[in-house]
Every structure is written in structure tokens, then in C-alpha cells.
Length: 77
Image (tube, rainbow, N blue to C red; front, side, top):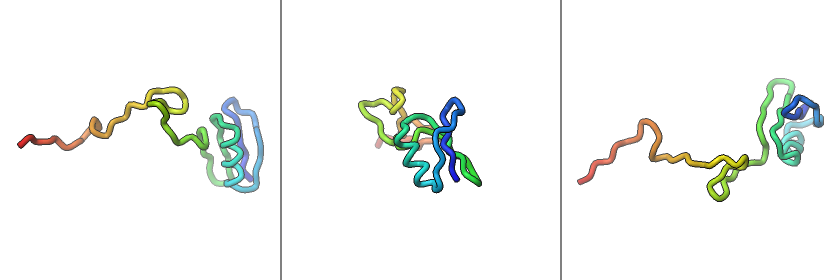
């Protein structure tokens, strides 16, 4: 049994399978915790896109692979 719990700790639903619990969490559309028999996972399920330079929570998405630590220095020939 998998329990879906809201951010403030209130139980929202129980589902027999993880697939059903994740589907329910996507419908809810807010931050939830899914507690199973062996683990728990939390987050906002079903959110995987950046639109107009913003993450789904409104924070600007400014990650740039070129500016990461340890990058290779280019040499100009």
C-alpha cells in the first residue's frame, strides 16, 4: 500500500500500486510525499518542462552547461 501525503502532513489517498500513487500525485499537481513499504519519495509529480525560461514553480531556469565547474578551456588557434 502506498500513501500519498500532502506537504502539510495530511493524508490525501492510499493506492495499492506505485503506478496508481504516482498517477494520483500527478492529478493533485502539488508537492506530495508517497510512502511505500520500503521507501518514500517526494516532489511535484508530472512536472518536467521549462517554459519561457521558467521552471514550473516560477523560478528562472538559468543553468548553463558551459558555465559548470571543471569545464574544459577552449584554446583559440
